[in-house]
Image (cartoon, rainbow, N blue to C red; front, side):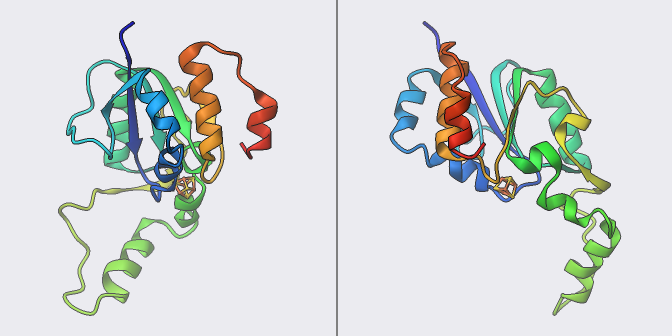
Length: 177
Ligand code: SF4
């Protein structure tokens, strides 16, 4: 049986969800028998592939680049999983919403700069006025809550999705999702 294509994506999050995914430890070896990781911060692929079976997305949509990425990911993925509370609710990144992006940029690049205070106009993508969860931009198929979701949560949910086994909701609840 050919392996499914799995992508993991990092939008506006702290990478803690990816760290928790990696905390599956030796269970990653079982996972590698079922999927090929075709795009991720942990592999060296620059472009999101055309056809992905499962995309796990960490982080909220905070910039013009994030919005472009999530629309492309949706268009090229059969199943899109919002992984973690930033992707699902906005969570930590959305704490800037009451201030607006200008105040945040001023704080980071002007007030706290010890040399050459200036707002960058290249490399740093244009921030959206409001940080929003990904389901406000595209359809999400599965929500995996937690900050971050635990390694056990990843394991239970991915095993069910990949093997067609029934999803063990009591176990998910026990592990904090
Ligand atoms: S949900 Fe928590 S762990 Fe995941 S990216 Fe957001 S802040 Fe980090």
